Image (cartoon, rainbow, N blue to C red; front, top):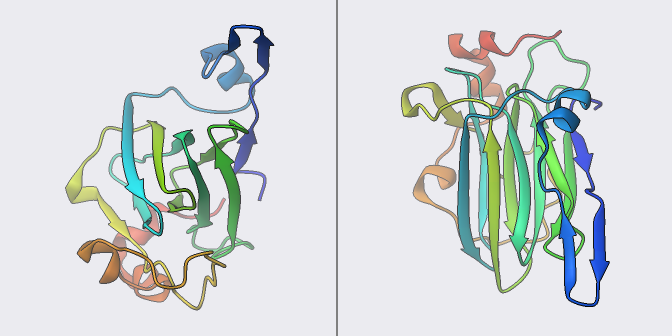
Length: 179
């Protein structure tokens, strides 16, 4: 799925530590990323799964990175008619490897914390709107994400999320059409 991008920034180490450009607009635009309008950060303990979340109004893509600890960052294709509908990409990202994952607005996003504690930052392409967001059940068998945690800590919202099939029956899912 070419729409999901893994970004590994250049790190310049020296005897004091390191320097890196976490985000640079011209490089992001060259990679096909949109402008970002909101930044979020969450902290979670080991075994937490958050997601699979998405927003259609306004459309919200996310550039995700782990600033402390390690997590499996996941993106799931939710586009109706897409040849990769329901397929997922998972990337082990950490404060050590500094990988970032871009998941467009038509993809659901989630993560599983692998370290004792992890902090995840998200640059968002849309302003949060609780009326225009939803989620897919973390262990939906139609998607089949190979989560490293089999008995995760979940929010009530994530525990009771809908399946991909139920989402595709909702009229709001028409916002995510392929191509």
